[in-house]
Length: 433
Length: 129
Image (tube, rainbow over the protein chains, first blue to last red):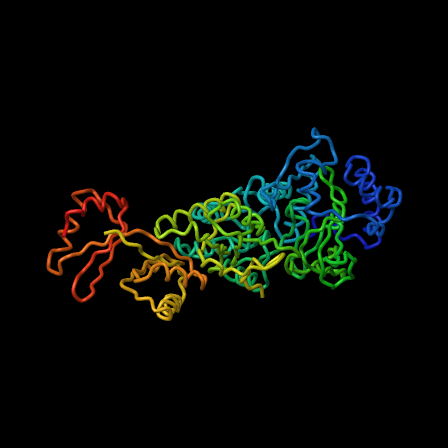
């Protein structure tokens, strides 16, 4: 069901007009309040008045994750600090997080977007929603939370951690809707079996899944096991958090909330804008954001767009499932992991060679990460206990940097391939078919 | 008596120990004793050989990580109760053992000991025959 049919069922022409007006206002604001954007536009001989229609967006420069990092922590904020009422942060490649700030209006729009998502999944005021994304700096927990309240359903702020307690709450509170990562949903099912519950004693009917890539096969499995309909929700903290895009009851593509987030698909190499149906990198512009608006932000997510109208009545563009990432970021158990984070930990410990290899796999339903390293011959010890202590040191440090555990595997010196320049340090064995 | 033991780091995969044995054989090095300890992903092959320096050279050349460790070798009578006697001496002198293994050349038995404290172990066994 459409939450805001005024916006969601707009005609293409009206929406384009609205996007053009919003883009012009956005550029004007950024030009005057964010030195980074003013400088970029001046270098390109662009004035805010050059941007009048949504088609003009192609004249504007791109924004990258590196730009956010270079302007850490708040260099790209477009309003005074007094206007920011909340920040979130995402993990960064070098231990430096990306900080995003929200004004009161940003939070209202976020809740509106989540309400649109929930409504399109069929969630309504009578539903009980357990939000099992992490609460805190991660956008997942709090983002969903306030959206559920805005819609008027009952929210249970489960967060992550205690699966047994979670199952009890799902059961006793007759929870109808659950929001979590798809792999956690499968883990939950196994735990439900383990603790001796019968799936028929639960009232679950809808699942809201995001935070990591998943497939139609996983959807089928989750739907059959948990007796629910499983929907995809998409978002990223740089743009807002979850709620940038969502599936509808047709489960045939993910609608991008276009009056707030303007999507383009580009060739990641040439930056040329690609037509409908062709896969490339998703680029998003935050048309209404106040705290940290971004122009043509390169998400590195690979997908394709389709403008044919969906039978749910929503006229918004749909994107395919995310097919991968144009850089080397790994998503493991819903957490962003950059090989360079692990590299920096290894380089800090003089016992190890700088060569390493990451093996990502799936055991049962959970992602696993193994880090293969070589102990330098001069630090090799005949004492196996000493070797195990070394192993634990590395695994503890990696855990504190990534917030997920990795299995450390010692391999023979020289056995990891040495190569010039960027070598293939990651082997991802997870099958996404 | 103190002797040099050669330890070789091995990944746990089939044929790896065999490669070491072959390299030593090709280079005419005699293995006097061996012991293999392992953890989940790697193992340590510990050897007593007749020419340690040569063994290190040929194995390093082939990319194996080697470690030389001092161990205590002590002759034991080949009769009932001799191990108990040996351990009693170590216990009395508070010498704890990280690992040990036995060597028998057909005539004499030796216990090869890697103690936590090398010096204490040598002192304790000074008068032991």
